[in-house]
Length: 278
Image 1 (spheres, rainbow, N blue to C red):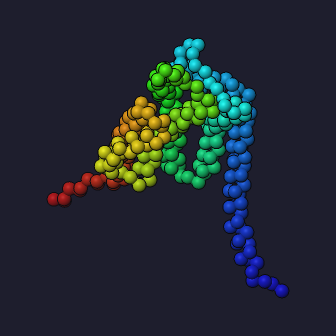
Image 2: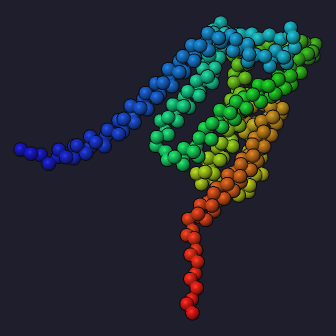
């Protein structure tokens, strides 16, 4: 006896197939990301002492040659510092692979025009993050550490000496690097919002004064509680905001010019009028 439900079951199975294919591909790409992260962690853990020695250079320069030291107050602290250093280094090393896998998963679902629009932002993200991290490492941290160490000396007859722990120092360095690196992605965020039609250049210009206040609030929250670090993050944030407005103006002007050229090409050429017969 034939059943009427068989064609419906076939339709359901056919609709499930693409979803299962996407889930399988997503699982494979996530596993590749995990493999890359684990492999990078193993390598970074092997070189964790060298990586930490690189991260401690700003503090060493602030103390001066032969001065200062790092301590650890818990027996297991030094080991977990190496683990944290390895995770931090592994994420930085494996980030290009992770971003490539995510892009390879998303790209087939985009139109060619959308790919061309998103690709510059994807390429600019690691460059801007690296620029922010470099500013934090080479400029902000040495300046901030020298400011902090000025409070050493004699206080009411007692010697005041800075004895930072390894875990506290590593947390401070990671806070600096992540805060500046992520903050430098502001142009990418604003331009993506503009491309999506959520914000316009005129809206960004109208809230400029509020964004200046917001920049100082963000700097006060995500940096150590000192004026030097806050100013060194707030001022670049304001400059990046102005740069975003300028970049949006440039892209809008370029898009408007391309639209005018396309419209001019689509207009049919006017045929010459025939002369009236005498």
